[in-house]
Image (cartoon, rainbow, N blue to C red; front, side, top):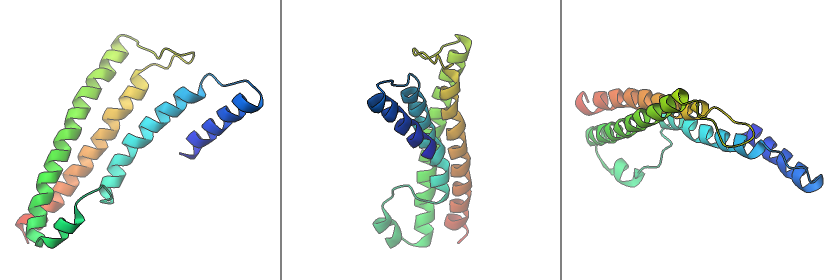
Length: 141
């Protein structure tokens, strides 16, 4: 995130102080923002920092929490798997057709597209780990 902030700071300085805007800063910042959003998902899941209804969750018994967690993790893994499937197809198509961005950088689009299935795979793996813990909590308490 610091790197992205420095890029934007540099671009703003060049634009307003020297009247020489960069041609690459906006595009690189957009790719970094997408990467940061998707890359953080698995780490946030590992720390259990995603938004949830703690009030109701904490009122349940430990076994009920385990069952609810299993349902939530199944939904999360299913949704992330759908994103993996769709984004992997987009990445392959972009690679096959040698698609590139419509900017001066002409970034091959399979590079930023490929970050999405990679990061979602990490989320699915973390979800599977959490689901195994929830099964243990829900069924073997």
